[in-house]
Image 1 (cartoon, protein in one colour):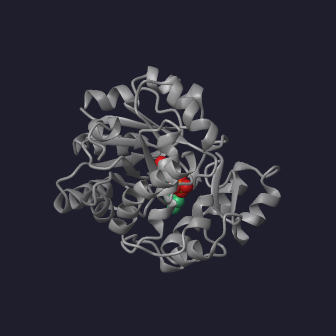
Image 2 (cartoon, helix red, strand yellow):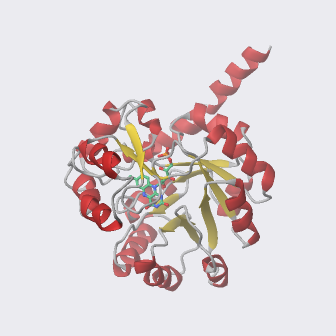
Image 3 (cartoon, helix red, strand yellow):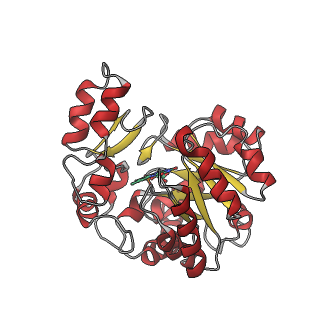
Length: 314
Ligand SMILES: Cc1cc2nc3c(=O)[nH]c(=O)nc-3n(C[C@H](O)[C@H](O)[C@H](O)COP(=O)(O)O)c2cc1C
């Protein structure tokens, strides 16, 4: 299975599944658990200091001999220090949040790293591929965290037709039906974020996992919260209050509104006034599973999907 899959070949992984970076949550042991299950684990440092990133990389290396990646969020305050840490640690796979990595692609290549870039449109994908991106991750509107404006049914085939590097579909995928649909749309693989938050190994507060299990697909809200770019999170008091004022609020007011709110959610479990990035796929997640079970379900569920398609077509 996946013997000729271009994403598996480029990354040296068994299944074409990437665990999307989860800021401050997907640490070294978590990424290693994902990689040991045949997918690509990705450390999500968020705004951690560079020294901690190196620690997480070392922890991952102690726990797996499989490939894993590290994410950079490209916020100017930390970008230089984070990149230096990644290059010093000889990280081989770097993923970026939705943004313009600019000359970072070239720098990463000089340091022997592959660049997997999150994009939100065909133009964005074409530009980054022209700049050397090795893989583009098509981020559709339903995704958790920073997200694009275009739905996956349109975005994924449009990008797959427009570029020659492997395309990964990101947003809204939690089971084999979503995985199969992404492959049918022309993607070589999938990036999965929210589903991995509700996993046994995920080191975030249990309240967050429970909130995901109890949410429906209507329970997320997209605002310009945290950074000023569109971001999807679980609907709660924090986001609803912000949605009412974001059109007229200043940057300073945004900073104040969200100060400390992400850590309050993921570490202290504040589901009302904490910021909880999550995708619309929360409506499809009903059980906390181990990362190995999540990956096994994604892969082993493909055949029943194909059987069903064949029955429909016959
Ligand atoms: C809690 C959480 C934190 C995230 N943090 C980051 C991050 O630091 N960097 C990044 O590039 N993407 C981040 N994302 C986006 C994911 O990596 C992934 O692209 C997205 O979750 C895929 O959509 P899905 O949630 O529908 O699976 C985050 C998503 C979630 C749910």
